[in-house]
Structure formats: C-alpha cells, structure tokens
Length: 446
Image 1 (cartoon, rainbow, N blue to C red):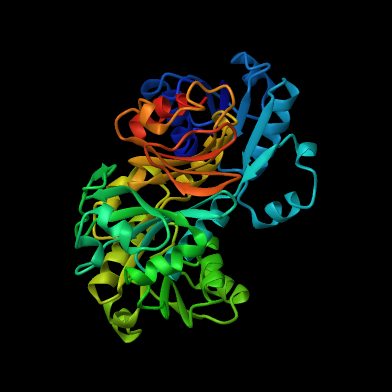
Image 2: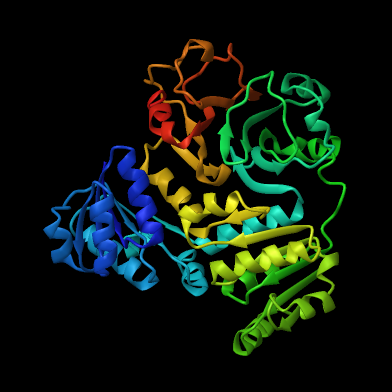
C-alpha cells in the first residue's frame, strides 16, 4: 500500500516505523524540520517538510491515488483539513487523530465523509477505558477484547504463592472447567511463547486468553480478585486525568485527584462532583503520608509529564500504595519502564497506533494490541477464503518462530486452538506473535 502520514511526531513516527517494516511504501509530511530529518535518516520513507493542508506539498510527493492518509499531527483542525486535501488529490481512505472532546461529540452526530474522514481515533477515550479495566481488576497489566467482547486477552502479574506457579501449564488447564490458554509470558525483559510443559514463576506477567463470561471464575480460582479496589489516587488534572476520575468514581468508593496547579485544580472542580481534589504535589512526602497513601490500592500518574508520573508512582509504591500505574507519551518508552517496578505502563500514542494499524494493514485484520511492552502483538483477523493455509490443520502450517494461533471463533463457537484445529474460511483467528515476526505471520493468512 502507498500510505501518507501527516505529522511525524511520536505517534506519526511510530506509525511510519511499523508500516515501513511491514513493506508498505510510506510517505511523511511534517512542518518541523527536525521531525522530517529524523524520519528521513532512520526510516526508509520519502519525506517532505510542509503542511498536510497544502495541495502542493502532497503533489510534490506524487500522492495522487494513494491508498491511505493518516492525519496524526497534534492539531485536530489540521488533521481534519488534511483529510479534505488528501481526498482532493484522490487518496482513497483517510483516518484522523481527534482529541477535542467537543469535536469528538460533534463527529459522532454527523457523516464523517463530509469532512473527508473515513475513521477517527481518540487516544484519550480508549486510554481511560484501559486504565479503568486495570484499576477494577488488581493484578491486570493490560486488557484486549475480541469478537465483539466475547473473549478477551488479559495481562496478569503473578504474585508470590500463586497456584499458577505450582505445576506445568498443561496441568493448570485441567484445574479450570472452561478452556483458557496462557498465550504468552513476559519474564523480565523477555517474551516467551510457552508450551504445555512450561512452568510459570513468581513475577511473570502472563497473557491469558479466555471467554469473557468465564473471566471472573478464572480470577477467583487463581485468587486474583481477592481484594476489591476501594481507594485510588490519580495525579494530574489533565483532561485524561479528569475523565479517568469520572470513570473510576462510578465503582470505586474513594477516588482522590492530586493537582499542583491551582487553575487546573479549579477546572477539575468544575467537572468533578463526587471525588476529592487536593491542591499539592504527589512528591510531597508529608502530604502523601497525611493523605494515607499507605492505604491506597492504586496510584495512577496521569499528568502531562512522563517523568513526574514515573517518579510519583514509584514514591507512592514506596510509601505503601499496592499498585503504581503511569502514562507515557513516548511509545518507545513503554518497554523501558516496563522493566522497572511499575505495575502497568500505558501509552495513549501506542493505543492509537494499534487502532490505526488495523486500517493500514489488510482488511482481514480487525484489531491489534501490543503485549509485553511492545515486544509482541495480539491480532484479531479473518481467515481469507483464498489463503493458502485455509483448510489446513495448525500442525501442518509452518509458523515463524515466536508466533502461534491462540484461538479460533466461528459459527460453531469459540475454541482454544490445538495442533488438530483446522482453519476455515471466514473464521476469526487470534494470532500471537513476537513483534519481529508479525509480517511473516500475517502472510500465512492473507
């Protein structure tokens, strides 16, 4: 595919890097000379310095009739106008990054095609949902849903004395009436695709695939949900922080928002009715002790500063908070922080990249989620009728190292995959793969 990316900042660069590695012909536009130079030097893509709103810049790159334009700049207005301009020169499909709450609301009430947009992505909305899932189920590091939420993949941190460390996977599966699969394991900074004789260790993060309606039973059996979330601290009255507080206070008895800036604190107070809002710093040890941070279940660093989110979450854990979670705007930092004593690291940019990539890849891909800090991916795709591997049993397919089919869903229902499972045309497939082998794994079912 010929793909144009408008805006080569953190999100745009990550998109360009991923799409270029998959063999697409990628073009990039940015008004910032440094962003253009970085992408030109580090990636094998064609770049131009200029605005995505400029017909002449798009024509300079000979983009008439290209397959896809992704407007990923930091300006909603620029992204919308860029999509209109892309349509003007015949680009077939346009996706826009939109963050304004008001714009998102308006776009949902009008035909997107009037603005030249086929789809828009709101990083903040999806980030709040992911964070809320993590807080609601202590021990969770990530969550992904497939087949209209009928089954899901959960990242779970294995604590000391867990039953999961007592025997090999094949024996653990026999303990649970319903089918489940430990599809991947993160151990330290390594991603492992385990076999039946694999034994989980304390500190591992396991990625469990199972039907959604059996999830709570699984959590109870293996003692993940013995403690209910009762007290949560959120740092940062950013719009994301405010929306997270509003989402959490629906089911968490006590949510406390901490904000240093008085004006931001007043803005939050105008939107939040139930939760306490404290004007102060989460790095003020005296304040945090007075607020009894040692009785907190979660501390979430949700400010606009990655450094403060990280240091504040670490300090909160040191002072007694059970879990520390942080937001980072740097997609490539997720893996870095993931190896440090933080329980979950969320990148809105990475979440958006995942949502956008499903449109950039073949139409067979329905959704994509990063796992293990970006070391691997979980993809939901449809087995195409003319794929060379449709009709074959999994044991007869040569998968690249570190890739596997975890589950299949079709008219007969959901099943955990085995060597004898046969791929049928139109089936929904959950593919788990190490990042370096995603392209080769996808080619098996194109």
